[in-house]
Amino acid sequence: MPELRSQKTQTTLVRGIGAAGVSLVALNSMIGAGIFALPAAVAAKAGLLSPWLFLLIGLLFLTVVLAFAELSSYFDETGGPVLYTKYAFGNPVGFLTGWSLYISRMTAYAANVTAMAVYAGAIWPRLASDAGQYSIIVAVCGVLTVTNYIGVKDGIRTVAAFTVLKLVPIAVLILVGLKEVTGETLLPASFPAVDDFGNLTLLIIYAFVGFEAATIVSGETRNPRRTLPMTLVATVIGTALLYFLIVLVFVSVLGDESAEGKTLVDTGRAIAGSVGALVIGLAAIFSIGGNLSANILSAPRLTFALGEQKLLPDWFARVHPKYATPGNSILLLSALALACALSGSFELLAIASSLTRLISYILCIGAIPIVRRRASEAARAQAFHLRGGYAIPGIALALCLWIASHSPLRAWLVTLALFALGAALYWLAQRTLRSDSQAG
Image (cartoon, rainbow, N blue to C red; front, side, top):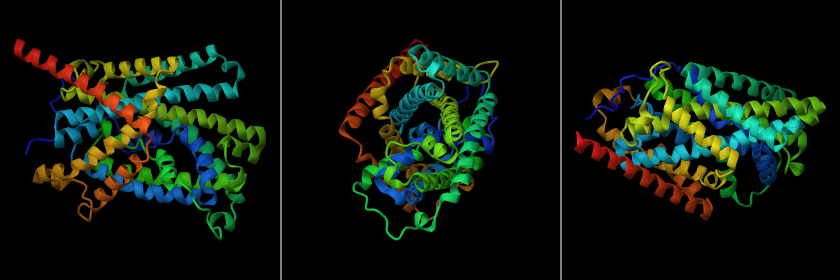
């Protein structure tokens, strides 16, 4: 079988990310602004059942993560889903997988930069003006661009710093709030009925998407075939437990009847007054910052991988000779996200961001039988094997299809438009490649 590796550029990426770094990337890609909004949104629909739903959906979603864990154990290059689907289905599908994830991440990055500015304006009214909001957006994009451009270790340190700053206040809130939890809150005599479980699942699943960011940076991960699988699984389990505890505290402190329109800031205010509200508000900013840090660390590696695989021009695959980072791809992501955040033109694309991610999951899960069949004996010996044959990937595929089926028509139309744009760019790249080949 062919090697599951791509040709290297002259200057290669540095494998400077260990197991802790992989976990930080996955954790911050999943936990961003959502943890401060999802508790109220879910509690308003499911009441005291909410904490248990996060565990249930997390357990089901773990099948998707396990499928990625197996796939990641066959590859050790940058790109993650791009490599999996390209190897199984060829260049066009590999490109569309990478393109859909890239658009999803770019628009999410722009949206979260804007959300950080809004939170900052809520805490410091002087920053609530248009000029203040724009200055925050530019400053955040600039700082994150520089820290990631000059080295992957600086990018990981930034992610680590934001992780501590956001998780410590949340952990304190949980510890203080657990005293409000009663037996009736934890295990009520009867759970409320849920009217639209499909839409509620679509809402809860937002807590767990983004884990695949860790597979994208596998080309800079030390021993990725062993590091990625177990780290992915452990991080998603940890995220599910964190959501369970924070939502349990939320419904215990505020009550499920008054959950709608509330945030964790209201929980902090109920426990410790204005000081508690300020601390949780700052934690929200740091949480979004951690999500942005993980995003700018992983998303540029998608276009880098597409360029390295000859699915985009070589310009995207160039590695900075001094810093050993995909500098061009980092600059491109920052420029696009900054333009979207300042103009607001990203909003239509953001509607379909979750759907495009689910489509990439479906394509990757579908690649498992082909990757297994084509793998060499040596690759199989090193791989992370799922028990039960295709049972776990089958459940994961059914879950993704079911969730995607609940997406609104508008999201599907936007997604089709994005795929059409991606197909056009891919055609242009291949045309240029053929022209260069003929000229040579």
